[in-house]
Length: 365
Ligand SMILES: *[C@@H]1O[C@H](CO)[C@@H](O)[C@H](O)[C@H]1NC(C)=O
Ligand SMILES: *[C@@H]1O[C@H](CO)[C@@H](O)[C@H](O)[C@H]1NC(C)=O
Ligand SMILES: *[C@@H]1O[C@H](CO)[C@@H](O)[C@H](O)[C@H]1NC(C)=O
Ligand SMILES: *[C@@H]1O[C@H](CO)[C@@H](O)[C@H](O)[C@H]1NC(C)=O
Ligand SMILES: *[C@@H]1O[C@H](CO)[C@@H](O)[C@H](O)[C@H]1NC(C)=O
Ligand SMILES: [Zn+2]
Image (cartoon, rainbow, N blue to C red; front, side, top):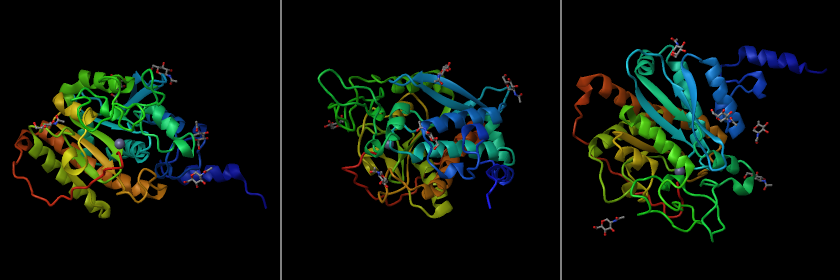
């Protein structure tokens, strides 16, 4: 008996959820697109599909080019409005090997595009806010991490080092104009935390900086997604400065932690970099807060080191589900604070929690 593959495909198309992608991209029969890691080609195809299927709410923008001259693309998601809209920023994949991050950006986009149709709160936020989502920021590095097993754990960009240094790559999350080069970095271009030859030496960091500069007055929350360790980091990475709204950042972060725990029982910890991870300078998160974006967070998703950067695919969905709850808590707070003045009064009480000081001396996240 020979199975008619064509009919089998049609059957799957009819009965699969809208998770499956269309024929032209070659994974017609994939029912569970969001439970797999995807290479850059697939993610680019997926971005096109999101636009095509949601032309009224999704558009894309190329806002820079990588060292290897690839486009850096974001999806802008929101409903038309006659009023001036506020914005939420999310970027994923600034560190190449943290594959769960791009997977989360894809999941997040899928979720809000589904939810706004039935969930009045998400719809309200889609009317008042535009979501600027960059699924893969470090495109060159991400592609490199997909090349073969020996490059799987690549972290940095792919620009060559300065004259006299034969290594490649700058840590893009140490290259921003935010106390650049002062702490938690290396000036050796062979190191994982090489901060570049100067602030904004890297085109990827310049692209984000330029975009934020154009939009900063409208951005309510800046969210940058990493792995691993299950942390929500608040500004700053630099140990000698403190955010003026530290209490607010912590309180909202603790709300996100609670929301995450409610989904699958996973424990996340909230705090500044020096308090719960390690100090660092030149991060995009610090830059975002320094230019006045009030809510600036780094998410370090699952796990706590068992699989590390190589999180198995069967953990993608639960990781994304819980992270979505955490993100939703933050953006709902940001939205309500901006659009309902009563919410603008921030309680200054801060729940004191016993926070474990995780020591990650060897692993850079
Ligand atoms: C990306 O993944 C698809 C689907 O597995 C595969 O067909 C394609 O060859 C991959 N592309 C690259 C550049 O690795
Ligand atoms: C939203 O605005 C864009 C640009 O102004 C327009 O092309 C599009 O048709 C509008 N969509 C809706 C649903 O009004
Ligand atoms: C890069 O972006 C530019 C401007 O949007 C576009 O014209 C070009 O086709 C894109 N290149 C690729 C390879 O997608
Ligand atoms: C590559 O890594 C995978 C997963 O760690 C392993 O199963 C596979 O055998 C490796 N392939 C080679 C050629 O080393
Ligand atoms: C932070 O301040 C202390 C005390 O003034 C100083 O010793 C240290 O060098 C500063 N750290 C950085 C990274 O600037
Ligand atoms: Zn990272």
